[in-house]
Length: 267
Image 1 (cartoon, rainbow, N blue to C red):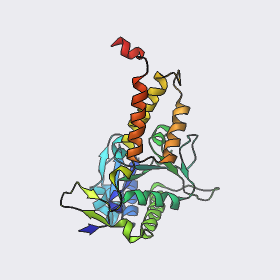
Image 2: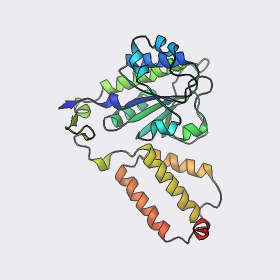
Image 3: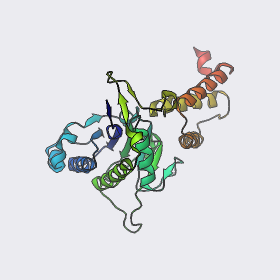
């Protein structure tokens, strides 16, 4: 049988939401656009009657929301993670200048794999460390003199862009063949080796690259800026899983020819 799965793979992540009512309002904004996968990272209060009340007809989205302790737990299986930020940070991560560009990229990847759109706290959004866990950033181009949106409004705007992008996908792109094994979902014309790596796979690669840079003497002390710039480079390049595996193989080969590190000698 065939069915359209992109919306099942589009995940909304709310980080440390302070007011439980905002969870309900965000769930309502999601459901009006057909989104149902909600993950809450360490909310201050949940479950809560206020969240259910403000969800109105979207109480099922609230009831089915998953609660995790760390942002990594919400996004590790995602191939593209976009952090919604009201202001640009100093981090060199790729930034979508327009929300519709972000939506097109997320929906395209969601045909094959989970993706996430991450929202931060009501008062100050996402921290720099949380933004570093994302592959991209997006901002809503609101009135520069008064660009303040509450959490559910921001979710509504970007959820609308996701639905708009999904409606514009060619039908052939959203037909997904599902065989009898529920864990075996194969998208026609997209071999596994061409799919994007998950955030967890990218994180392992970045850690491996950082280790080789230090052990080879390329960097002799922690250089967060250098590693951030390389993270941004690979986010822009969007290597496939196969390409990332080749890069890991290259790093392993280089690592084998390096002298033992001080930690290895201590062992």
